Image (cartoon, each protein chain N blue to C red):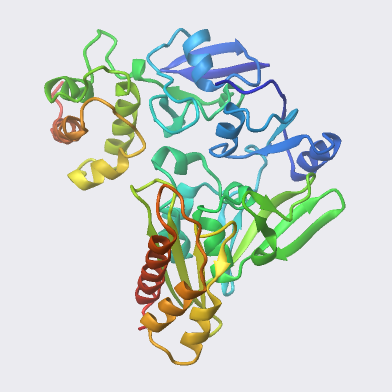
Length: 269
Length: 160
């Protein structure tokens, strides 16, 4: 199907993008890589009256190391995340995003702001304790990734706000594991293990509406428990929903295995 | 909205509606119907083209976003004299197509793959081509074709 008509604004700056969103009065959408938004428009699941194209705003793309973290500009393409070497966990996770043509256009900021429950980058953001920078009409604000995701495809972003940057702490040890039916398909389950400032964090995606910390697993590890015990404790805590891709038991078992693999890859055994 | 871009080496000026995708503009305004529209929501890969050398689903990009870009479609593969590109020759020789609907996207994805990795193994070919769906061949012929074309493209060209 074809998209419904909309006004197209090619923003030259973040200020212009945010102002245009404000003027759209809740009926505007940011167009970045378009790999999630355009299908939604084509299927007429959304019909915003204004699209604000941010692709030509200078300075919004790039991966910059900064102390114990890297700053990722909202317009950084997934393919650039795969190629960069500053944050290996981000590169590992980005390889799992869609297919080559999707990674060439899809953006880090777009994926996180879209908040798809089976997307990779939101899980890395929660798993590493990332901070997002958001620009709005009143200036910029920062919030923790864990506070950004409020539901499936829902974030704390206001209708006239735009995510501009994500700061991902650089873990000293890390592991990423994902289970999908085919490479590039939506993940059934994925797990991130990251040791940040001496603490092991474990996050899961694809299992609920938002990425979740596997706190039971973290507690077991902090108490000196084994990886298997940690994975089992995390699985016990989960209440996955069954659908045609897998029963609740299957998803719980796969989640435990992905946690075990992520922790093993992190060298935490 | 007025836009200018280059398609297969030719400059094109168009006045497009913002909601028209690059695939719509290529097919309906430029008459380049080789870019096929299968699903129109980014799943099947039939409409894959190169935009500034990078593969893109032409159904997930609005034509207005291609303003100033360099686009390569399947029509840009063959030589001016109509001689097929080695990839096209290999798809014919190795049964890389049956109905042909997915073939333009397959060829563009394969072209980008061989530009970035001239000697991919079969597993790499399968992974890199996984964004293109074929409902006829079972993929084996396609993988054979890409592997064979890679070999041909690696050979030194005839001395001129």
